Image (tube, rainbow, N blue to C red; front, side, top):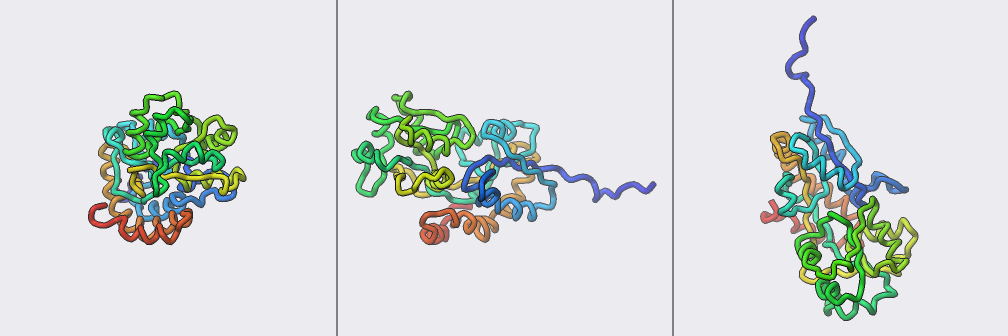
Amino acid sequence: MVGMPATAQAKETLTWLLRDFPPLTIFSGPQTGQGAIDKLMPELIAHMPEYDHKVMHVNRARGTQMLQDPDGFACDPTLLWTAEREKTILFSIPTYATPGNGVTIEQRNHALFAPFLDNDGHLDLAALLASDKVKVGIVAERSYGPVIDKILRETTQSDNLILHYGNAAVGSMLEMERLDRFQAIISYWPEARYHAQQQGIPLSELEFFPIKNAPKYQFAHIGCSKNDQGRAAMQVINREMRVLRVTKLIGFYAEWMVKKEEYLRDAQTFFDEGQN
């Protein structure tokens, strides 16, 4: 029997870790698979024939565990960079920009928040939390970006922060907010809007406040195992995402924006030289 040629040897399998994170990834309902990252993945995979690819649906804890496994070979396409995460995870160039996290409330509770709003409608989150007037729901172990993360770490009235550990956390917290278990949640507005629409909550009954001193947009990255396999894959990912982030992903994500034209206009400067 003639031996198999060396070029036919098995490829390494890269496992993609996807969490249910609308409108980036959507695991259930009429728009299953129509999220921005759902649409990106076939494009990116097609541009990485060096590997076999496996897509795995995970919760946050499982995904984090697999990414931090020094002997694993996995990537998550929806991560914010933090200094803590960089100790154990390899990060790509910026791949997409999402409007910054903020506070979603029931419009009927507006008077509670009015004293903490500036003239531009930005909320002083630190002052709000220090006031001890409201309880705020947050997703456990999620990074909201450096400005909000720092405020949450320094909040002394920690009993006013209600942590949610379950799947579809933002959807669950919207339900709890309607029951007045707390008066606000921290999330992305496109994410809160998606869950509200799935639950039949009229968007006119919700209000969203960006956070004082937080940037208008936050840049997300692909995060991979911090080992030789991850570093090799990241070279390919960065090469392909320099093109795909502009030609594909901006358009996929813009479909979920309330102000689509504004987002597309802003997107023209997202990946200037300073963004790699």
